[in-house]
Image 1: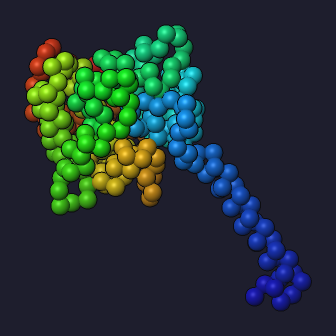
Image 2: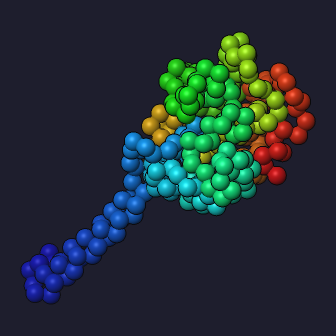
Length: 265
């Protein structure tokens, strides 16, 4: 309609130009945080969420020379997880490195620091020599992937059942299993985070397709959007406690007292 007069043609050209500008701007943003799989020599961790942030450029794409502030900033920008939730994890992560200020993602596989037995997607350290616990293990992940049958979501109940099944397997087969209050705290918090970050923060219900994509492909799931409100300790703590209760956890060493408060203060 606009093209029938000189003014109309000018307006048409202007609108087309504006469209190209908008498209170019959005593409620039997408390119900055587009998904690129790691290259040979890049460093990746036992944590699919940190690997996702590196694969999307929120952390250095080579996964090296990472500082605690960078991790906290990346988690906030990529997943809207508040620094208070991950502060303890960050501090412990630095202990895996011989450097005082930074670490590489692969160093996080140091057993007994952040990396724990009965992982949702990695083999126990006892069964994974030569840094094998860095790698995604489909056989291990099948416990989670096959949970909550008949529906297209994971929830607090299924997350607790998966944690119990993974721990039962480790108790039965891993003579070097470490299963104290810190370990269950980390496992419960990690399970709460995949439910909250990828699903509903109040109910702890997350689409299976979103969770499976993060764990298996280590990229942002198609159609997923990060939470509009920050995911803080007050959000994570109730879900983490509920997941832990659903897992019917009992220590095989150590004691229970004050476990969850160790991570989120």
